[in-house]
Length: 162
Image 1 (cartoon, rainbow, N blue to C red):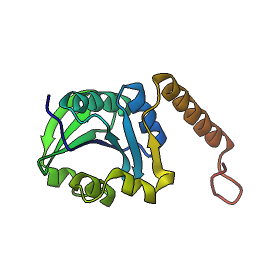
Image 2 (spheres, rainbow, N blue to C red):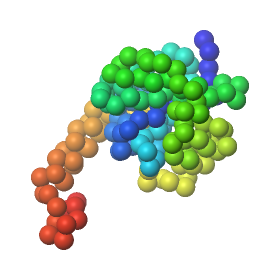
Image 3 (spheres, one colour):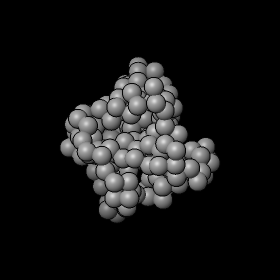
């Protein structure tokens, strides 16, 4: 079994709690940080099998938008696109990371560890190490909260309530 130094999935999901719950429901334990370009899930298990699992699980959830599974081995970064549960093509790392937020590059290059970055952005970090039942309940709570915000509509001053 081959292991990477770091294994991550970068998604357009703009709520780290959602990605953390989806990962946990799919048996993909790790931690998630919200970036300006989406959520980045960093896996505890860096095996090739987990790379395939997280690509399939997360891209099945996101459906219409591709996700990118990234890893670093012997200092070399690789990127594979996934869409609707199907592994796509390998992407040149420079192209895949060209417009990625700095935190993605920092973590993948090994310049900083997840704990260092998370310590600076605690409000943007979620844990994907919960049970499947806890993950399901978390997704339900997030969805209920989102429905409540949508139902209340914009405030009189034009800002969102909630």
